[in-house]
Image (tube, rainbow, N blue to C red):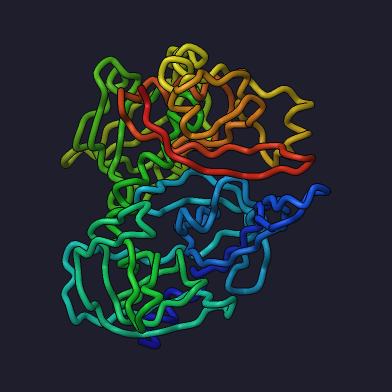
Length: 408
């Protein structure tokens, strides 16, 4: 257990999130009538996370980094950083955030969760009630559990452990005795002792290609996917895409991008972040016993009509955020979509959106503009669930909200 902790301790971080919330309170009018008068306060929560990649990519729970919250990260050595959200998956309660470290960080060793056994020893590291790098040990109590959170969302196929997990452990790592990540701690049973739950690491492997998808984040067309966490093997090449035209094939292993060697699939996605249309990407590929090279030219994908799709699927009239509006909404990052109108009885109306609200996120992605919204909505079908994060100005204060609607 000591060796497991020593191997992973430098990879565990503390996360703080501060957001404004409305607090109901009873008051009385001058006529003596009682009414509910909301007040506001800043709510600060703490959680845990772990370093996924040396460039500052960190994994935590989606509920730890709610839409609009101001995020801070404290490393194991006590260094503090501001953080920004790269993407969230609320259906699996996972999120990736980013800091800009002064030097390369230590990623956590990644294990697997498809071969776990009941009774296997576990180690949990986190920051319960703000106590940094607390270690608890236990065993896997059960596998393939379903976890119902307040009747709102069900997390499936989770790990149950009796390693003590407390408030503040959310987002921290659950390790095997080798110090490898096997799960992401997410919840506890408050009506019991030593019943905690973790999201299997294999679910993280599944969602990373979507969360770190440069095509959606950077609005470029590449046309290939690789395995995210193991060797960077090409698993998909779209017909007619730049990758296919450059000669990339399914089964190729990407050895390097522009001369920078890759050791894991996650390296591929990190290297592709920030790339823009028109840039060339030089790939060195291992193909059986031979080596191949491919020069892929990124292109700009066709732009779906974001305004039309927002009205069609959501019942919203929208526009890009002007600079003065962005300042009024105290945006800490560029982007967002302003709501100009809401169609009565539409999905947006049923969610409670109003003219003047600022859409800040959709699904896993922070919105940049109407074109970005259109790119995301182009993949939506009727009745598909869509998680929306938005910011509202009310009585001179700003509030952050999250909700789910269903496209029409």
